[in-house]
Image (cartoon, rainbow, N blue to C red; front, side, top):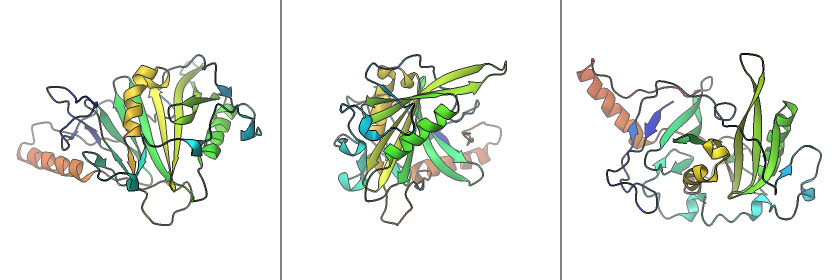
Length: 279
């Protein structure tokens, strides 16, 4: 729905890569629009890492995976993503309801909207030629859900003519995928993405890296830091496993947009910030 950008300070970001100005966030225009980052506008990936394990047999047991790929519940979250109970305060993060995020200098955050339901389904961070979509879901107390979700993503892609390969990444087991699409000339093309999942206490966070970040570790590094720096606000409500946790426009951003719009009413001939849909 909204598109907003963290302004870069004139003296550049701090040593940690974050902008010290906690309140600097503005609504920015997007004349070109966006596509669903899970299926389009993704860079191609030609080969997989030598340590990867192809997911080709949906009936294969998780126990058949090499021991070098730890299970999701073994992931050390000491460096994030964090649960709200694990941090003292949200610092300069933007509160999106179910998750609090800290944009980096020059980064755009785009809200992914379900047009029919009218709700926000995810947040996509765009930095240069790379992007990362973040979504958060409810999970049961008994254990994580990334194992099952990962299998379902792989099965769907393979059935549709794509490919999915399990790899060990910074956030644990990831899926490196090639997504098929039919071009205007009738030929099938493939685009790449990386699906990462983190099981937390009664929540699950999914991050989808695309563009240059799908194949280039250096390009993915700032987006990985962005994901690690996130804080999930699960709440205490009883929710069904896999239920999408509610997201909202941060109050600071909504207020800035209202102030900009109020200013526009005084000068209707001056073009100002726009709210656009991300499809």
